[in-house]
Length: 136
Image 1 (cartoon, rainbow, N blue to C red):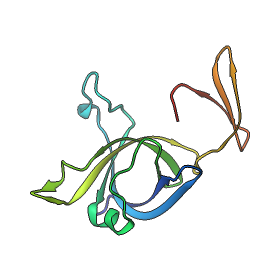
Image 2 (tube, rainbow, N blue to C red):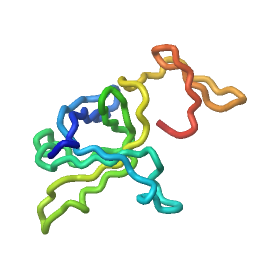
Image 3 (cartoon, rainbow, N blue to C red):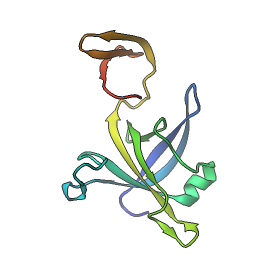
């Protein structure tokens, strides 16, 4: 995959926890010139290109909003899954995945949840407080 290939962990949400699959992906940052006004991509998002053969080996056909990708010890949320850009005829060569985040290396489990006047506060299992502005 070249010099930009990095080891990544695909974290598939199975309802109560995550199943991890180790593979490699071509990882780049979106540039300001890639942004479209009103589009879903934000500055700081990452683009991953994952070979279809790697996904097929794990039986993964698509990752959704509840799944995560771990890159270099940081966990990212799936924003967009594109299996069509890198398709030749009927053959899927690779998928492009847009991810956002880069928080803690482990997906935090929520131990306490309470609503306060400043928004939704969650206390994670390691004691961090986070303001939640969108569904996780």
